[in-house]
Length: 107
Image 1 (tube, one colour):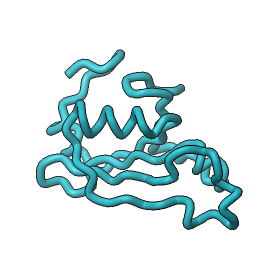
Image 2: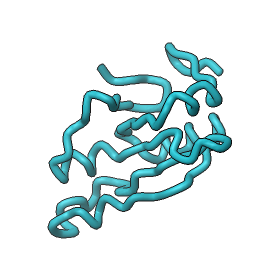
Image 3: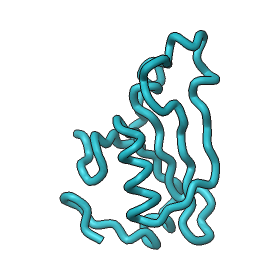
């Protein structure tokens, strides 16, 4: 399957290890990876529980991180909410890439 400027084969992608992506638009990201690529949500992590107060993450969109599976690979890929992570002071690791929308990786 061709997506933007790169190609992904879910079976090859899932076999590589858990990959983490940080999304600026969780609705689009979740829809893309689940509906289009066929990943299934295996676990959900609610980042709002890590906030010092509800105001810290209010209005930032979906506060959940979604761990997904493909085939028998339990945590093939995880999708994190960028705005919520930024508000909580969690910076991106070098192992993660930020996506503006599915198919376009941020530099």
